Amino acid sequence: MVDEGVICKGQWQGQEVLGIRLNWRKRYITLGPVATILGLAFKLRDPERLLGEREDIGITVALVPADLPGVTIGRRHVPSMHAFQNGPNEGHDVFIPLDNVIGGPDRVGQGWKMLMSALAAGRGISLPSLSAAAGAFAAHTTGAYARVRSQFNLPIGRFEGIQERLARIAGNAYLLDGARRLTCAGLDQGHHPAVISSILKLHATERMRIVVNDAMDVHGGKGVIEGPRNYLANHYRAIPVGITVEGANILTRSLMVFGQGAIRSHPYLLREIRAVGEDDTKVALAEFDHVLWKHVGHALKTAIRAFARSWTGGLFAPAPNAGKARRHYRQMSRYAAAFAFCSDIAFLTLGGELKRRELLSARLGDILSELYMLSGALKRWEDEGRQDADLPLLDWCMESGFATIEQRFAELVANFPARPVGWMLRLFIMPYGRRRTAPSDRTIRKCADILLEPCPSRDRLIENVYIGGEDEAVTRLTDAFRKTIDTQPIHDRMKRARVRDPQVARERGLITDEELKRLRGADEAVAEVIAVDDFAPEELVHRTSTTSSAPGSDSNGL
Image (cartoon, rainbow, N blue to C red; front, side):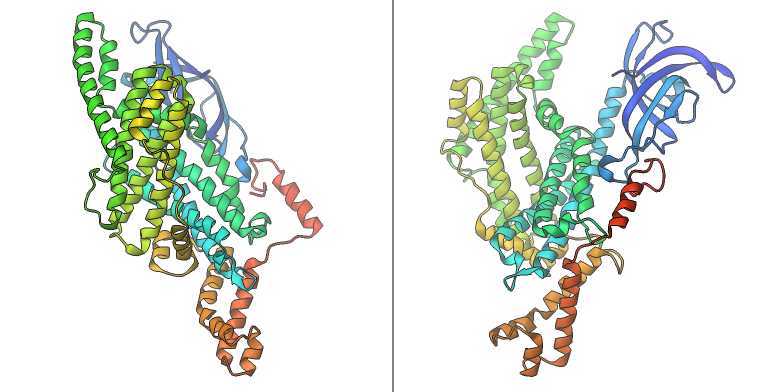
């Protein structure tokens, strides 16, 4: 961190007060170009000891009015061609009073806690909500498009290759919103779950990437060609923004999820660390020995649980009476015990080295993350009344998640630095090898069918998706979807009579004039939906020039 503040005296509103002289330079600041007050984190020093005996006070967060002398607000960035207010700013010898520190003078040096607390809430809301919305949007539009778009006289959604993508979109949409609801419930109760927010930010944005990519693949050229008819391209371009901001996903996965989560959630590890840091050696040894033996007892119980549940395939693992989902709870209990055992063994054998073994830490973090995300899916199943029609979506989430968990366990065992320890882990947690694979074809087909036909399950999955106004692309797609479904019985009647031309069917008396009108209306609606935009060369030149205008102007084509 190059941003620095120095305690000194200066002029503020005509009076000499004790304050901070700031110098900073920031590259990427959300809302920076339009903010009137900047929230600034910096290293604070007190070389003259005006506040006390410490010279290096530490990271501090303060509010800085953007109109103060010395503050320079940079021009706008254009992240992935989106109208997202982001830009640089800097300050040179900017003076603020101590009261501008968040929390006042008593909170100097406590900025890191503030930042982590703010991120704990923000990362659990903004980007996960964006990802859940993208999942629901992709489920609606891709399911509708796969239903109205035909090849070989068959909706493309009936081809199994497309159904695999539709099922993945539907399953991830269900999972994302379940995890979002679970996390927001905790935030509503006043909790600040830093690790859970990291899990959700990381895996929600990664699943958004999968969902949007699948949607683009199903739409084909429709998703590639730019223009007003394209309702997917903006989502596609926005993916790197979500992946990068509020803690880049590579860093979050490799260092934060398991690195922070294990210490925060372990019943004894944090107490052992605090005992080691105790100044009084006698007290430190007594406390450490006391906690250590409790840790040993905990580890033995964890080992027994992991061994018993793994060798029995989770058959007798504890689970609530959750109806058809009970089997999933049993497997969750099995994998949770295996994860706890692996975590203890990793800390015991690797110690501080585990922090540098990022690949191992990331795999353990993936297991923890899957357990949390799947918990959100199970909670959604319960909250929505255990809907039998939604069971394929829950099954897809659980089968996919369990396959990922076993894959990470297998990678952990195969790459554990101490090979005898790896063999022991395999004996305890994977005695029969990796058994879980991807969701079954039957589950895939059922999930895809939910997106291809109007039904309560589809309505729950795409609840609150914005359809748009009369002339918007998604509105036209929704209208074509409804008309296609409405006229399907007419097509079925014609198919049984082996007549493809509606006009011939009318002449033979197979359909009425009103049904012929409905068929033609549906065909026109579908033709409008599958059409893409085109432009004259001079239009493209104009669009290119306006897009290249100064980012701070209103004519930048965004």
